[in-house]
Amino acid sequence: MAYKEELILNDLSSRGESILDAAKRLFLKHGYDQTSLEMIIAEAGGSRRSIYNEFGNKQGLLTSVIQQQIVIHTATIASIKLSQLAPKDALKEVCFRFLKGILSDTLVSLFRLVLQVVPKLPEVGTLIYEKGPLKGMEPLTDYLIELDKNGVLSIDDPLFATQILIEMVKGRLHFKMLLLPNDKLLDEDVYEHVDKAVDLFFKAYQPSL
Image 1 (cartoon, rainbow, N blue to C red):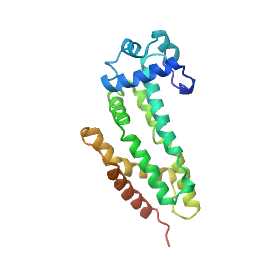
Image 2 (image 1 turned 90 degrees about the vertical axis):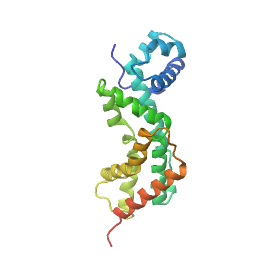
Image 3 (image 1 turned 45 degrees about the vertical axis):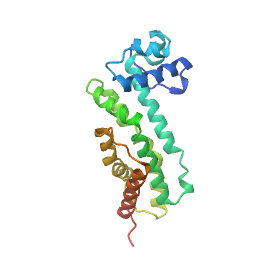
């Protein structure tokens, strides 16, 4: 049975939500290949039919776990009231929340898991690439367009500017968390990193006098 590529998470039954939660915990703890449907059923209840009806198969479960985390992460970004903040403060708030999200234990562990399964399940990589965190940064691109129109910044390619800003914010700290799992970052460290990145971004896109 094919997995459901466009699962609507809001349509899950309470049993489906339990299965999804159990699958996330087990995937992150044991890995994708080492997690069986029987292990998920033992923890969440239900049956193979429950999984097939709501997710298609184990790959569908993994896809749904990823989709769920994307929804949670992007909703956090979208909830920021950008118009109520000064431009530089708004960008710093967006970048801080973005970075805190991708540095969370859940998303770091999920990223490691995805790197393991993508060679065998390339469509999982496609899902993250096309609909992952950068897709969720569309409100930031819209905000940069607004800053350009208002003359706050001079941005000829807002989408590229968004990608540059996110990579400046993400790069070193995300790489560190992936490779040094025993190191913990304080919020102060994240704030300092974000401050420097956004300040540099503003300098790069400052309107010419």
